[in-house]
Image (cartoon, rainbow, N blue to C red):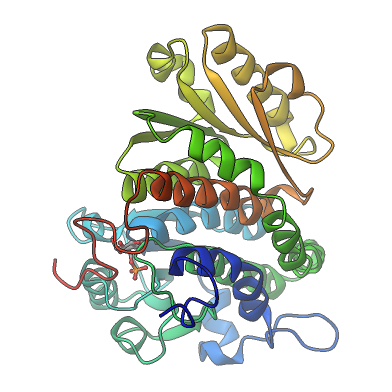
Length: 372
Ligand code: G6P
């Protein structure tokens, strides 16, 4: 079994370390020599894709958070409205779907019953369906019009890590492809993002080499009863994913919030000593979001929160208000989630380990939920 884990103590730890490759392999072979995306594998005509006027992403759990990240990016790059629906809600909310709707399902296993039923329902309503999936020949890709595989390799640990990064990557590839099809400045912008995206695997590898302090922080926090996570823009779903990992693995009450929502309620939870992770957008994120999140850190710190700040290298503005700073390599705003989630995964892994829990097989959970 040790050999299967490649020298790591758990599958989860191994899979966290496979993330540079998961992202790299998901990009591999999808560009031509001019760096343009080629997605013939989709088997949907360019005409049909150009006709899409609305995208609905359906997924559950971690895959749904990948979808939420993708929404920000795809809307920004294509100007096509994107909605994210939890798959088990989709069928029961009288969804607005036409032949011009692209329904993108995201599933690591390809067997999640809730997601499968959502895809079937979407097809019945006449939508074009694309499956973003990690498992060849599984049910959801077979029941979809098209499939864009993530190439994360088999994921054994119940809590998803490398599949999550590969899902974001595949959704980005799809969004950038739609932007490329739109042409003009959309295509130019997409080409620039794609170039940056190819640099992400090396940045994840670099980040994984600097996780010692995160591991230490996790060990010191083994008795913690509640942890909050704040993020904004693409950092908001990352905050929720960080919280989900902690619930799943360490059985600790954890919640992710949009940082802007803080003053509308959650700030009441802040009392002296309350640990809060803050996913800080890079300083060049549009609309001054960086400064706004720095103010949020200041506000909760003033109320006694223990601030665990995830910030880009070189971001000095966070320093006066951070109890701990976890640095991530600099990248463009939309690509940041592929980095900022990594310390949160590592944190949950080591907190779970510190509590003596089974990281790969958390209680009450299954890797793929094949019942409704
Ligand atoms: C289960 C797993 C989660 C996963 C979700 C969706 O609940 O425990 O880790 O995110 O299913 O799984 P899928 O295979 O559809 O991505």
